[in-house]
Image 1 (cartoon, rainbow, N blue to C red):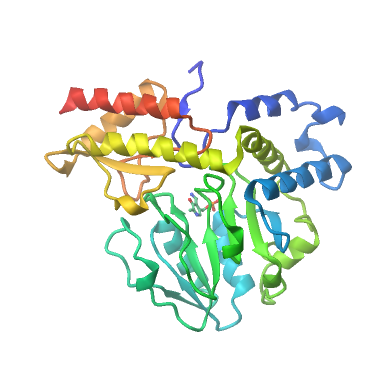
Image 2 (tube, rainbow, N blue to C red; image 1 turned 90 degrees about the vertical axis):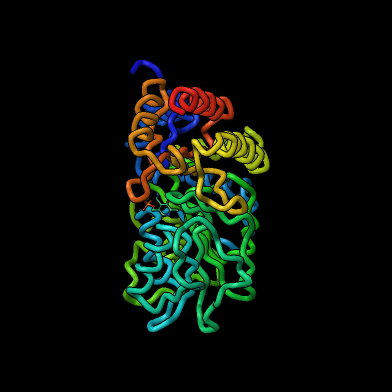
Length: 366
Ligand code: PMP
């Protein structure tokens, strides 16, 4: 393939071309340092500048209050499934988990290794809706309440921040990171792997309120200890330098493009276009997710014949889209079907191209 495809992957996902070109132009010699970012010491003045600028930019973008630390860690979202309880849950402690999809399911299982992770509501029959917070039962002894703000596989997203009273709210924002403004002060901790909306795989960003530092249990591995990381500017050891550098370039791009209000507007427009195409297809395409909680970034749908999903047509759809330069539309292996991820680097025009393709495919096959 000689041209770049439209990449609808759930992550790692495509990056803004402008950012890739900057990284390309700076590849051999970053800002006159005589070396690539991949080759420089993380202790040197050049990398110090890179990580400091990335943090400052993220603080501006998200209006992060001063009493929150920003950490650039490794271990992915999955690392945080363990880091959260190891830092916030005392021995034999309890935490409350809202299980709304596969990723919060994995998180509760991990947390249960280190204490008691109690679900906020009975196991859902399908991950197609989020029970209103008024119906949750939060254990009064829970140290924190954990949510996954956007379930990447099932396409379920919180329309607003659930009010958990005086409990500490922890959120996995891996897949909707930087796609809408967030009131950071409502959370004790937010985290996101950067590989969907903000950069190349390797770096996980943790935004944590300062008073929650220093509570890690003795058995917490040092690389997951928020206080140790915060006290050492995320660098008691070697950080994921390249990922941090490109992520910083994406932050700068987000600022130039107009910040989170603008990306919220774009996310809304792109997802609306796609959901309208699905809902207006007379049942040929079907999204099972309740309208109120439909994700703006991961849109799963099935292709149906007489109301029944057809894996054969879905395979044809994926292959035909691929042939037209639209890549990675196959649904997650655990649910099948189709999934289009509309992260920040996806444009409205690219989404329109998918919608046009869907209309043509439907005409041909219904
Ligand atoms: N949380 C969510 C919402 C995710 O989408 C993912 C990865 N797709 C993870 C956690 C796990 O992240 P990682 O692969 O970086 O460990």
